[in-house]
Image (cartoon, rainbow, N blue to C red; front, side):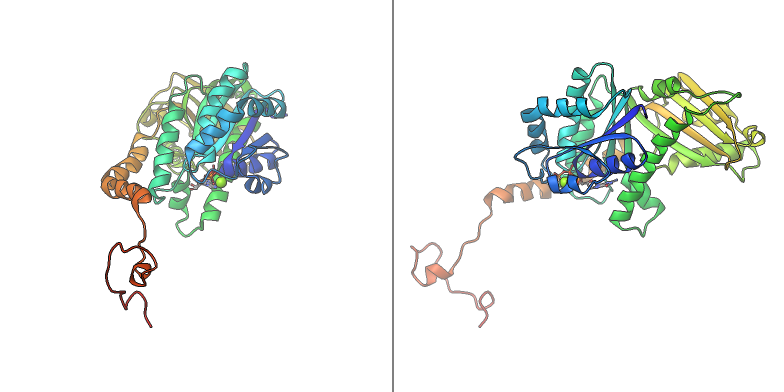
Length: 364
Ligand SMILES: Nc1nc2c(ncn2[C@@H]2O[C@H](COP(=O)(O)OP(=O)(O)OP(=O)(O)O)[C@@H](O)[C@H]2O)c(=O)[nH]1
Ligand SMILES: [Mg+2]
């Protein structure tokens, strides 16, 4: 039985839980929209918040859904997962349900599920989403970053997938992101089950890394055609830049893992100090070396990173630039109305704005 559980919240969260279920993780989902959740057929345990039909990208509806049903939801989560050490709550930051419910739910679960660490798989939307989604994402990530006892936060970056596959449809991007994030987490968990005479990376090591508060990133680099230590090092850095997660911007990780799998010969090309020279030396490093016939691969886990300020600032800057236009749109919602001229012209209603009916408006 895997020691990490995945709780999907909202549609994107449910989709990630579905992928996780197919990889053998314990999973459950919570949604305000039954129709979305029912599509995630791999997930058996489902809680639909009664009286709701989606949150329509309104975070306050998600927050209310948790506040009004907190005991039922916590009871559902308790029942759904057995003997896990880490629960990862998966959701998108820019909708209403997952974005609104998840930070609050994580806080409540941390209080009410003692002994289980809780982290997050939070999806950061593409740059080109509209203002409402950007506001949601910024608010959600701010709330997440304030949770005191939270473990790893994986920031899944849909833009990273777009960057690697510019022609892909939205659906392909989502599917690829969901698969990549769960395969990365699955790999580092599975590898703890292997044994090695050269250096084991065991479950305690992994949990030590994943229970670090802050942003976590996992990436794998195939080093098959590397000839030198420099080439190996640059392949590792490249894999970090191109992973499914928001790329690291500056901060040094607090804990890290370095796992090598492949022929013993190629492992000589890994020079740990030079790998961390650019990233910054962490407080603790956990290493694992596994001799096998598979393609030589270095998997890096960096935990305790800062939230990617520049990536998030770019959201906020574009909101700031369009502030006047956005505020006038918000105001318009409450002030706009259409005044018909037809009734006044035909004297059906008391006159408001007398004037001829325009021929352009009512062509013959
Ligand atoms: N990576 C990934 N992103 C997704 C997926 N589905 C949706 N998204 C992203 O999530 C956003 C929409 O969020 P949803 O998860 O549909 O929202 P929700 O939590 O169900 O909230 P409401 O629909 O507002 O009730 C989109 O703008 C995308 O950024 C998915 O399966 N994978
Ligand atoms: Mg939805």
